[in-house]
Image (cartoon, rainbow, N blue to C red; front, side, top):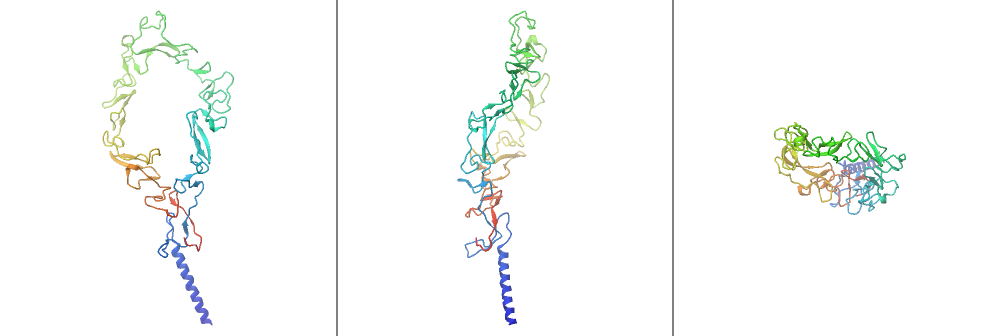
Length: 379
């Protein structure tokens, strides 16, 4: 009897050990979301395991028609706002703002100095908060009677005057010079002392402008009287392009530089490639190594899509750089960085790292979605 009991105990112990060995083999560690398994009957790769393929999207992600599994964020996607196939309105010319999806609801982001004061996104941002005295700077902000709303603030700032509801700088406004409505123009009276070069004599490149609240002859914008002969040859120097007087009289550009819009351009290490701007051929992908050498490669995966990568230039040699989260997995620069690593089922987290596409296993945040297996269920 004792011997029989011993045999039964040994048999039970052996069976238990066998089960533990099998469970140990079936519960191997999961590497970055991939469940390892053992081959069963030649047609299955998984058995009872710690981690199994999961196809349920974690919120707020969803699987919408035409998109890879679990790639649509219902909280922020303007085409699927709050639910699949629930697009936000498209902004038009009179919308004066942009429609966004926030917390699963369509909202409107207004342009600067515009607001949706009636709470109706359908008519866009209907109020000009930059000039509306009843909504000055914000909805419901009312200015005092007689005070204009100028650039979103009630009343005119220091140095400006209220001219028929508009704030004007009387020091420099040609239409309101020293007083509202006082226009700055050439005097009709040829004996006016402001004709400092003689009756009705107006030197070259000069005009009547308002400065320090006085209407007088001055150089036109972009010109200067560098030889101090105002009444002789007027404002003879174009300081926007003159190499010896670039931006100001006497400001001479260094050899190899050019005067562009009043600034000496092309400092050391850059060259002018003929388009009016200076470039560093060591880093410019449009002029890599030398002018005109444009590095190959697509800037976006398809027309209309945002750019996922771009050609680069390092040390005067062409490279191709993918933006974070994207990769050129097919090695074809013509279609750019085509793989979105955080959601691509065949390139999940890295090129070639595939989820179980046949089972519908999504790639979420660069990991194949898995869940805790139910003990005893063969997958």
